[in-house]
Length: 101
Image (cartoon, rainbow, N blue to C red; front, side, top):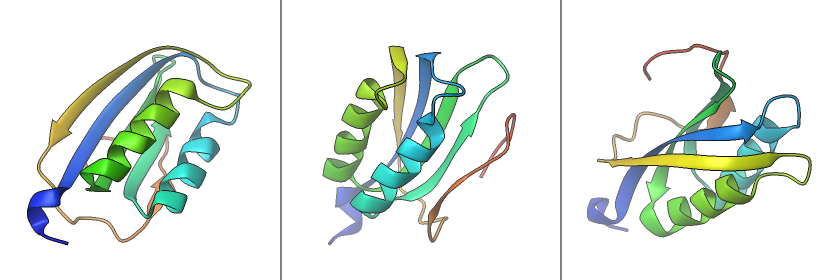
């Protein structure tokens, strides 16, 4: 796989996404897709996702973010595409309000 096929997705998910297993759903899907990065609940009630990997797999994760787990109500997903950094070795959960990589 060439580096040109790799990308970074930063997404903010809004709706009823806290207390419904949303972060664990994201970790499960990201692990299944072989992506790296992190997910966190934010103080404003949103969920923030930073993921890296093949663009096609990130697009699949974005579809999962728009759907969410059955107990969630996703109202809006803001997405931002950035260059791949290769910064992480796995995908995990970060504490609320975490800034940066």
